Image (tube, rainbow, N blue to C red; front, side, top):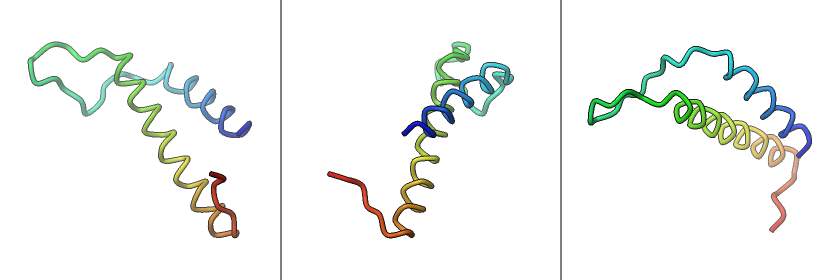
Length: 66
């Protein structure tokens, strides 16, 4: 859990410096809010990282506690 929090803090620091040009556009023509795009990218990275960690743990004989 601690490693996950450190990784999230690092991702947040890196995305704060990243450009906000993404593949997202709005259907109503309103400009894209860069903060929403950054949050979406963070959650996507967190989901992917969790999937990698879960796969690694499963490979080593661990399952998630219920």
